Image (tube, rainbow, N blue to C red; front, top):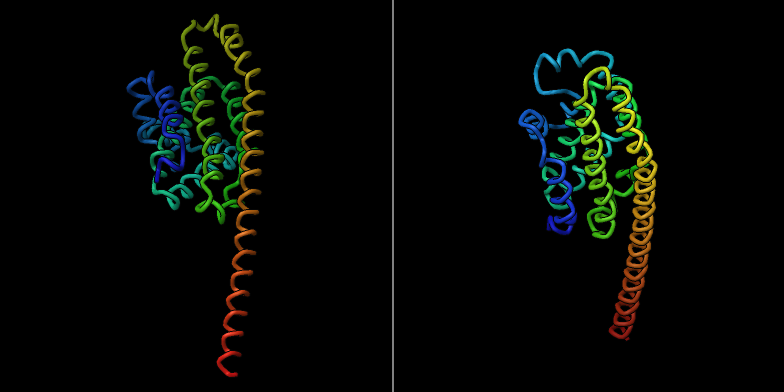
Length: 238
């Protein structure tokens, strides 16, 4: 049933693109990621340091995105028991890219703002949870959103990794040149997420209509059965 939830090829491709060039330390951060530690780096010392106001503020700003990812995994767990296959790469990709970006100060804040904007337009699972388990097309529409989150993290990772290479004297100019096309591309990224939301809303509308029709058909059938029973009872009495 897991193959019905999300295109395995699309998901495997997105995950492989993200993980192929991870360093050993980044791989450890990726593999051990979870909802609880997504904002922290690997070591206990770093975690203690990061547990200050900056990380708390970061967690607050990213709450809509984190909550949507968490809801997605819980929904998949109910639907097909595959949430771990999806949530580990999502938490891992988010954790690694935040770890890489944390050294870049104002660009780190800009990246966080990008994630905030993505979180604001993600479809809310609470709206669709009653329909989720019985309508595969709706599941597929929702799943595409989360493949794109992984793709966005991959592109962000590439930018911040390239930005670490030049000397301090050339850093500002070098990173501006890296950031500009990434920032310009973000407009298209947001268009994609808005289109995903429209598709989800469309599929949810179709699902509602299907369920409404099934409910009407059931009501007609029940009435027909009651009428049949009534006529049979009348014949019996006569």
